[in-house]
Length: 235
Image (cartoon, rainbow, N blue to C red; front, top):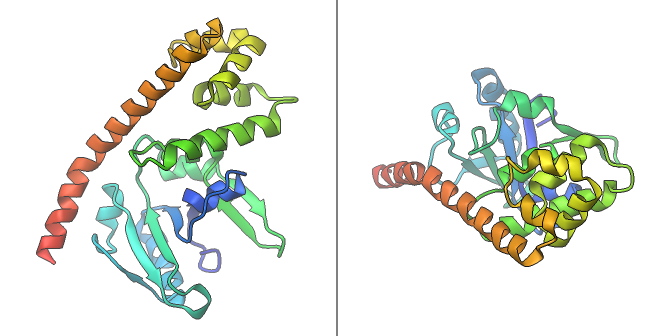
């Protein structure tokens, strides 16, 4: 992707590994800029990987812009059978231009650089109906908290209060940072239980929050799944 100057950000399980929340995944999930120029750069990158579309929808810009993922399987000897999924528009996630501005860039041991979704954007992208994503969100935010809790910045405190899914840590945060917690209560009502130290109520509220997000994701994907079914039958 870098060789062909593709605007792409690593996300999914591979990105979780770099953020300290290990997840076994042979897939490579990429958020890409869905414009004609970027797709012209993406096509030769996929050709270098000998990557072929393995499912519907076809590799066309209109499907990316409607929120579909395009699925490829690599046949290059150095990436045999690796699956590459590319997306552009995701539920609840900002447009790509903003994701690119907030990206995390890592220097790899060999000298190469790697662009990832920022941690807050990755957490938002993980709020799906899939069972495996919610424990991963919890691990991602916990890892970030334990890494930065000694001298946190205000935006990090706000991120933890908005996204932590561990009752005990939310109670601890509410006690350490009462003013930011109070400001965020309107945004995340369950913080009232954190302020009161009510871990059982907090656990139930977190589950309700998760259920709401899962339902929103199901409703979001319903018309997209119907479109995929039409494409399968048409193919």
